Length: 342
Image 1: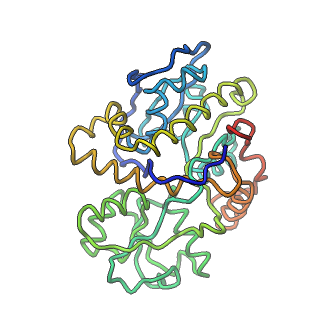
Image 2: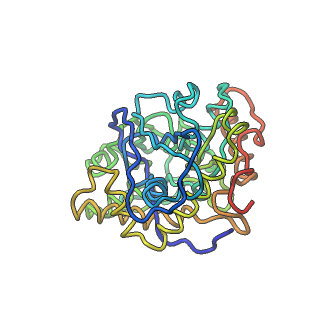
């Protein structure tokens, strides 16, 4: 069922520091009466517990996974852990990851596909001080840009932005600054930083530092796919019903979050130890509200659909940019078989 309205919700890329955590299912709220049966399906959420994973927390807390008939375990793993290592070893069956990261993994030989795209607007943006002379990607020539590292969605988005402007990485001073965007920009260490519209930009605004954001990926003609859910080939072949059940529950959770953002933050606080104060919850709510527009489905497509045109454009861009060594068939990167409403 496609949704044209989406006005509040989740995400941002989590903080860099992380420990390997196993998150036990926390039941609360008003779970349904249906009890799931069968083997556990483990979803890797990566990094530390964070509001970006609210759809999964809400689906578990409110019993949506149980009602869909699937046993789910949510597992957080640290940044030092290979993003797809647990998927390859069979410890996890589904993983939350960027579509571009999935593409790199497939090009590297990992037998997997995206089963759902969560964000239809790529979340990474260029952030500059409000009084900066930088107004567009073309203005970046000769300037310094801070990125967490030469990897991941912020780096991929910067390369896409430069390519669209006819520039290369040799035209700018790219600096790896870790997850210190606020300190680097406010301290004049760099002229601009790459961050997330629904996380870093929100934090700048909360601090009172005036900034502007510049789109890195054209929302009308995107060439990168943002956060998605991937599954290994064996799970797709053998547990399709469970994948469909997970996506049905996540779809319901997104709708709940849209309609009940404050309640969703309270649920998330049961999973995220840092959301103990009113101030922390207010910031999490701001992140939710900044995220919903990024999740809005493309016209006439159900929520969570993998858009073929975007995946094709991304596969082509990543190869031309040298982010993958071999060309990949875009249609091999995703499946919409399990998307609710397809």
